[in-house]
Image (cartoon, rainbow, N blue to C red; front, side):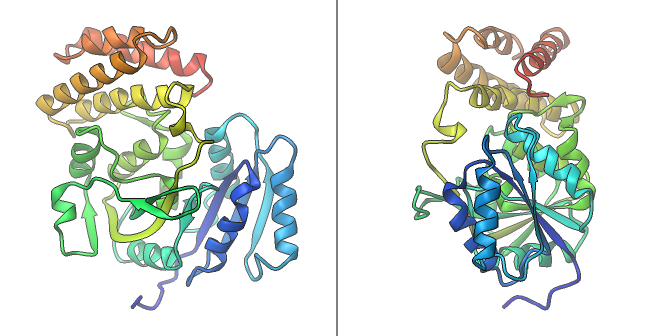
Length: 326
């Protein structure tokens, strides 16, 4: 049973693009046992169809009793739309939730997250989520660290050492995505300037934001499955040779370097992680003109010597700038 809710307001930020999953999204929000205090939709659809669909659903009562607003998106890509939403929200509530419009949250999502965030000094709360098919049917779980999987605690406090070591250091994102996390208001700057130790984590914005938040205060990890990541054909992860997946894969190297520089990943683990990512980049992108130079560059970083690390940072910044990801 959920304890009486402390006073903490949350705004849901929806970077909207295609209204195909809007009905499910609105049902998820409307059926919360503790509804969001405000919902901001940023319509990034090319023809304004998302705004029209939201207003039509609202007139039918789907958003009854919920304060909501639809604004025009920047139409410069998904990440720019998230930045746009964070700027418009502007710290107006104590917490915010970036809800991708094709994912799910289950009825106790906000009740559990706000309870956790109010129970201690945390930067964000992250809950387990299922990986679902397009229909929403849960298909599989995430691979969790043994200490997490075997813990009898429903809520875990994850400090920055554990956050970096078990995700970046292992090249495994067991935290998930923005949709299954709620941030406190003072973490907004992390999303507006996505860098750690001066190194951009563009491409891995969600995982980068989580570990960056852990540098401020611990993460409250909720062992309950409170949402679902929907797999479908029209998302970046289904296009392994697309720009965003290339940035995500190489972005792991950037985060490894940042974690090593901050001494959040020990040198031996950092070397192993870089070696693993070198193999992945070579196997996947060794023949891709725009990123194949990273294969040899990352391979040369195995000793964490200053010169190849510095060359990687320069090339990473150039890649992001050329592709409009900064």
